[in-house]
Image (tube, rainbow, N blue to C red; front, side, top):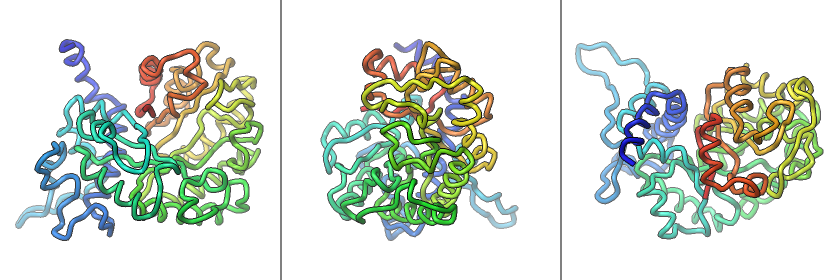
Length: 371
């Protein structure tokens, strides 16, 4: 196994690791700044989960941030990108690979297996569901505990869209669905409110907004902003602006390359988009093209579907033609790509999770959602 690991050290310089480091930098910079959050900062200014770690290895505690010194020029302001460059110098190969894994946990407290995934295997993120949330105090304490255990600050993510996908229903009651919002101003305000809600409970990544065009797929009932690419782009862009304006939470467009005109829920089977390549580009890709031009997109989630007009052999999440060819090369996107869950029925009828992980990374994804 050692020779392959030595060859893999080239990942340290790859565009994929640059993108991951940028997202990590966004999280870490927010943690280091404190962001007025007692979740991350102790009274003495130490970073919980990073500083004064007697047991768990802290991969980033030795990072030195440039500071002003007497009779020397003031250092340039530390940006997420420059901080990410500092961080990656302190990550081992295992740390880097761990950052590519977003895992799920069972229940409302950490099991021994979950602790091992965080501390030993170095998982880079956790995806939470409503079943993980019992109360505000419980989920806030759980997320603080996770950050304390993590050798590298973790992406703590959730799908908080509103409507039918409202993971905080037990805490805050109903929230408006995407379909019920009538103006970009409303969408932006919902983004601001969702960011405050996520930050209050220790989350830093929201797998939203939905950028699918159309309502044919039963999975998307009430979850899309409409059937017009222009309206979807305007509403999703406004929501994303509101969500990210505080710097506390990052959003993630989904479900690239577009489920709106498919008829199967990928949780249970493989959706197939029967559009021509031109129809797909003019409809499903149009909101992504508009939003990417705005320069505010940091993460995109890739779903599982077949688009025979583009790749007749592999579903979107495993397709180099769709992820690297279209999203990276054609649309010029250089942010983080996250797969949808690799346990969905769309994939597991043909590929094992291990096979899907390899194919997804080859296709161009940076983070894979697994067990």
